[in-house]
Length: 165
Image 1 (cartoon, rainbow, N blue to C red):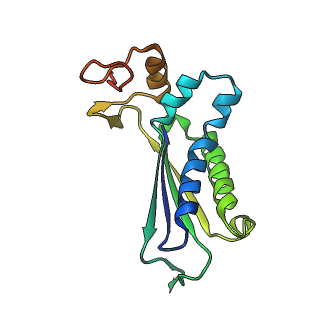
Image 2: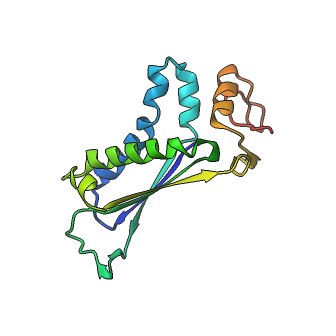
């Protein structure tokens, strides 16, 4: 379960760059599962809990000066993860998110040389996140239950998310 909020100045990224960034953020964190041989259905179920929202800020001020729309993009990325993932995982998330941002930026090195990309990793306490009106305990639990058909939606159809605590 990861949720990415990416803030950029309005007009800083094209539609294609925004889509590419969103897709890359999700796949960046799923590659390990594929390499470790995690079954495809578990990966797909986990992917259902990964979301990216890209927000274009109309006003962006740095050091008391408004950022000019023609300047290269700046980024603030807030990543929400289960609080158990904090600690060493924060370093990994910051590194990977910066790598993904650099991959879509016209001058990738500036993300390592200038303070133009801020990444904040926030822990979501166990039991304080939910979907479909129910508490979601963990992504792995959802993925496992989905792959076995143990989860059904509220109408009893297999494959939906009826998360029970």
